[in-house]
Length: 267
Image (cartoon, rainbow, N blue to C red; front, side, top):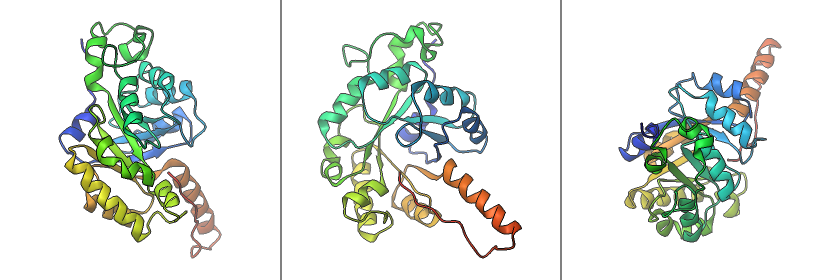
């Protein structure tokens, strides 16, 4: 029996658009609730949410059997973190702030077993191999692992073509908020200059034959990104949705329906 099929990776390879949602409440129970919402993928955030490896793993497990594929964003691209979350059963990982070819190549090696990589051979102890019940996991794991790198700075954009050319990088995810900040436009991810940089990046990613990803909390912006060529995109987050919905409910009850809850975003 081989490693489980990564349907998200297969969809990206076939250029089937994948709609996603951000999971940052750091709760397996919340992740399970969201898994019934119909999204193709859910991003379990280990960068800006208060998650550690066991909690990330619990949320991956909470999505088991749902139609929503779990993507885990680690806080940094440390080899030991990648090893642990892969052994815990994650098949798709996202790494923030990738800016060089050397970083991308190191990440590819971290998700591959020797001799092609550096991943420690210990999956028999983890969920990834069904606790050693998948007898040929070691031989089949690599083809089902999906590596997404985030491009979130001018330095990353400068090296985008070279990063996209790295074998083993499956997708490049543009981070509008961090990119805007690096461009001197903090808090303005929808600025025309940022949008133009994203348009150019999407075109370069497509020419490299890789998948382009992005997220936004603005549905008008989401439609624009889709038109620009986004292959996978998140259109909301659990934290902001909960905060806005509960505030809106109170305002409606108090008869102050003209007031709209607002908030900042940064992904």
